[in-house]
Length: 278
Length: 330
Image 1: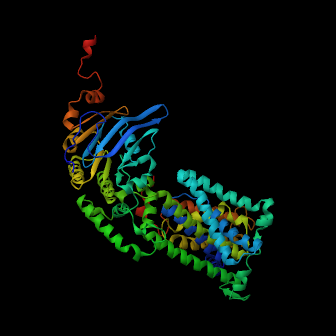
Image 2 (image 1 turned 135 degrees about the horizontal axis):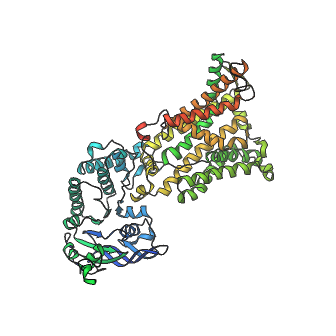
Image 3 (image 1 turned 90 degrees about the vertical axis):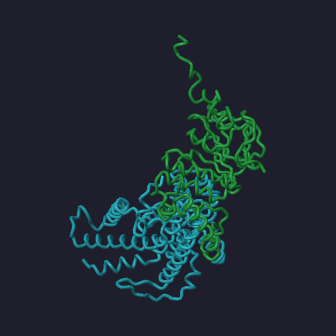
């Protein structure tokens, strides 16, 4: 069994991991002349919390879309647990245990919070048109799904709004709902696209707790984040993207002291005085 | 003004087989647009597929009526799958364009001179209704309904029509109450989110198209059965727009909405028609505004105006949930 709290790996971009759940090879995505993503090699350690950081426009979300099967690469591949993601449709990947959230939350506004949750369960008997009208066929399973959904809602402190339309709850609650709903899929790998964006500090702390819990329950977490404090607090491993490439990876401490990362974020001339050139 | 006559006429029309046919077409459309969010502007095409899918095999090829009903269902499913190809790729507004074009292609093919031997051309396809005439238990008797009277055959078709409305209304209610309906409503809100949760939205959308299309096809069958002729002009865009009006009037994504909507729609239309007719006949309004030649058009102007007011002041319709409709869906 690999250690869950630490990643044993060299701190070089594309370093191999002991037990990777996600492997990216030569992944490239072009939009016209623009190369949005160009990752030679990347491995994500199973059971770890890995952060993907980088300046705006670094290609993080595009890489996420490619890895989660919501976009098709121009070249190269990304594989999840041995399945090439571009060869498997997005919904099938979720069934295999990879689930993602979105930078701009995608809650189902005119469904209640509880319905949002219950929709997330996979392999529902009543999801066929010929079984749906016959309640006795699916009532028992639906009751179990409801119980699981309500437990998660309690954990995420959303139980008091469970009968509200999801369009009526606040932005922070939507973030929570999206994460809770992803867990209904019972995933192995949870990919969170900026889970903390636009969330107030108090809620941030509880979200951090939830992310740590995911790891404690045996899930792998890969998340995109801008907030280095948060990355420091929960990530076992950090990967840095800039201009579509993976430029560095390592523990949070190693990354904080990495010259290439500082350059990517602040510009290559930071620290040198403009007066020196004159 | 003879109000008793006006009310009895309007009630008669509201309960006619045509109203039942429109209710069926609207129930099907509601599956598409109300529950799944598929902007189908070609519902008339499904009705036409049903009417001609039944009429042609019987009248031209001598099929048994039960096989012909099967053929109607088959063509409705085929059309749903054909429309499904663009549906899988296109977003709502583009789907609307494709569906309206598909429905028009069907209608115009039916009136094409080259195929008159098969489709009956502009005269419509006749000669398929013997099985209904023979099965009619009411004979040639006339049955009075207030000031109106209905012949046995019409009564028979009316009863079949409303029976089908009841069956499909209940079926849709139970289907949408289950997890399948939940998934469809999820797709209506955000297809990508539902896909990210491990659901094949393609399959759900196709199933929705097939279900709504088949129900619409039965509506087309009732329309053709009533007149004992499949009339190409019946299956124009007007039919689709009336169905939209009915669904919105009754309340989107409600099981009883399209049924009550159809009854009310025909009641109001006939009511206004009769009032205007009496106004014109008794010279109550100035003749430059309403006369006996134009009250038919004025009826539709008023109906259009009423629909505009409805959408502005009560977008949820009669049974819809105001809170649910309050959110912008995209």
